[in-house]
Image 1: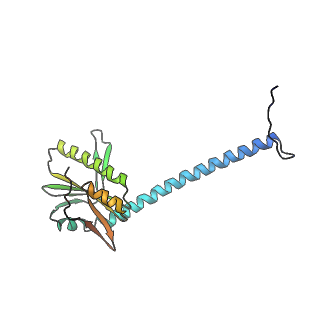
Image 2: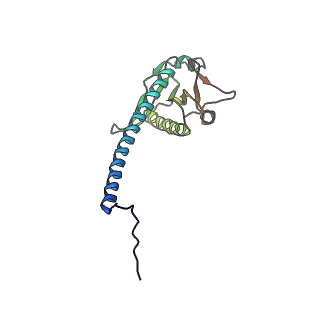
Image 3: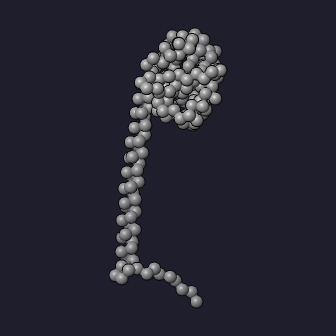
Length: 186
């Protein structure tokens, strides 16, 4: 003998009432989803603004800081540059690019660098090397990651990857060059 179970609704509640409640919940969920999407967009905008702020903290005086290390940069793209493919599509963006006759320094600026930022910068420098090889530009390419808030693990990973680490100290930025550090060349 087959039996079907039906839920016990409170007295006076009909199946139509249950469906009305479910439709109301579904409608409220749509509104919540819409608000969550809008919040995500706003957070992305805010994160970009923090990134811009970090770039404004790093850009002034960055040439002088590297020149004090012996680089003698003569050209700086403080607004960065884009690497494009043959069709004009942007393949990568570099926040700050410093150049002289023998080398290029590509600086990635983050408000709070993460491990994935280090991995992305390695790929960015590999791409920059490919682009420069196409124009027979054999200058050495070095990398730097700058952050307003640098975690110790991220800073260590940055240095181990062969990048200079620039971090906020008080009202200025400082290039951290550990003893024995040799930047990686691309």
